[in-house]
Image (tube, rainbow, N blue to C red):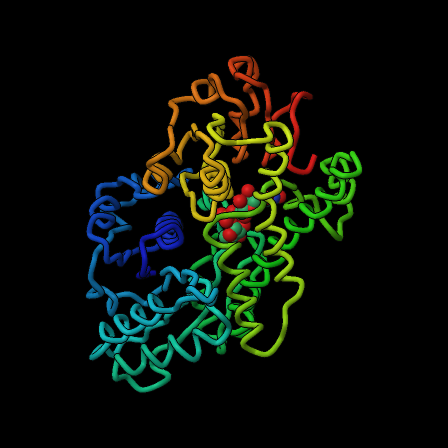
Length: 423
Ligand code: UDX
């Protein structure tokens, strides 16, 4: 099928590239010319495992990027994969969704060919029906019914997005008519996964609910972890026993410094905002955020127990990305920790295998090391902030520290002479 994808960010680029791997012809529409040039040169603007191989196979053949909407009428389907960032009041900012819908509408003006528009961005329930569809129809000047709409949320984890695309737990297709459902289903015909047909609004809500539930599992584990720490119990042993209950499941029960990234914090905030706007006080969701925000402060409290005064103390931070296998630092707990340490006038030296350039742009004032060993050299304390597997093999490197205070915000080390945020 000929498919256009609006947005060449994490979701758009991965979706477009993976659809080209499934045999579809993909045109990615991205307004940033630099990104367009990089995609067309097979130089991925983001780090995502397996993505470069796909770009190498299909760019210039089944996959191209461009910065205008002129190719839209030649495609049968257009995916909207633009960002829905957090507004100041916590709600989802739909500006990019609105401008993409208007541009698609204008591009479809005059065309008589059938066209289906599928929203993949995370949007509050009702957005596809009440914002996207009317904007497209109004700007296309076409009669209602000649353009159809669907909502097909993504469940891609950063760093593992290509794997997740090809091995989904489920494919959710929200449409209000069977024809659109069958068309979208056909796109994914080669993937083995249960396909769920829902209403447009339910598909939109499934995405928020999934992210909110996963975030709840993490904050719940952190709360249990905080209690376990006071009792001297290993929360990881506890959660292993809890996760073996098939009604609960073993994943997303890792206690630690809390969740970051481009999805959980923004989506839980947007759901809270939405609930409040409807006159409902979402106590559980608010507590999920509260526990998450308090975890970095707990880490600093533990650090202060060891070093009392942090002024001019040399603190080594291992891990800056919001999780392993990505260069993304959005909402990373490491950045919250850096801010708190700077307030205490600590001296910071950081190392991350992928995320140092991004962090340097936010915190040019701190020191960056070329390796974990260099960062640990002469440090008064070390905080482990990202679950990078390579940190688990650090051992003799800790001997170079001035004082061996090692505190884990993520459980990666095997040694006994350390303390964890909740273990
Ligand atoms: C998430 C969802 O998993 C994905 O389905 C959705 O489409 C986008 O948001 P992502 O943000 O890429 O994906 O990362 P994820 O692996 O879910 O981790 C999010 C955060 O939670 C990270 O900061 C991670 O360190 C933290 N986490 C995760 C925990 O603290 N404990 C866990 O058990 C799991």
